[in-house]
Image 1 (cartoon, rainbow, N blue to C red):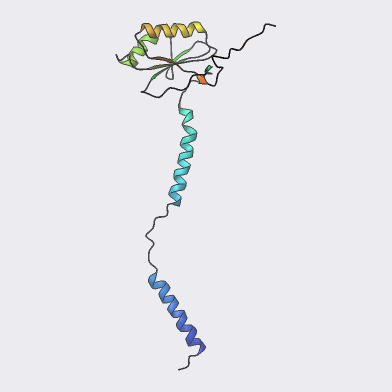
Image 2 (tube, rainbow, N blue to C red; image 1 turned 120 degrees about the vertical axis):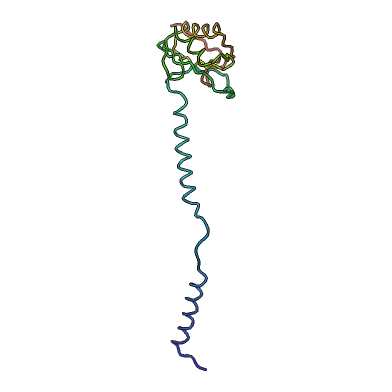
Length: 162
């Protein structure tokens, strides 16, 4: 039996098309590449925006050698600006209204920690008055917030008068 060239190529071509079409079905795998791309973009957005949400009143904190404290519960944040302005959270408040406002925030539980963020250029008198008002108000967990990387307590810098 002799095959012509058209029959031989025709039969092979038919077999290939039949096999290719018959075995090919719908893909049942999920393509996760777009999902990973979206998740990485969201991760970058949250990493950039998270530090901007920490505190609303910009001040320059003094530097100390003390390390950071472990987070315990939601604290009350009290900010003292360089010009003497007082803020509870993001709201500006007068010194006379400080004690009643903090008592309302503590809701009778004076064990709630209070974080005092004082600008390094704020007057010592204002910071001392605020600390005294807090301690006489019954608050016992008062924390001063500072930046790390300041001068060590063992290495005192000497100033020379010119």
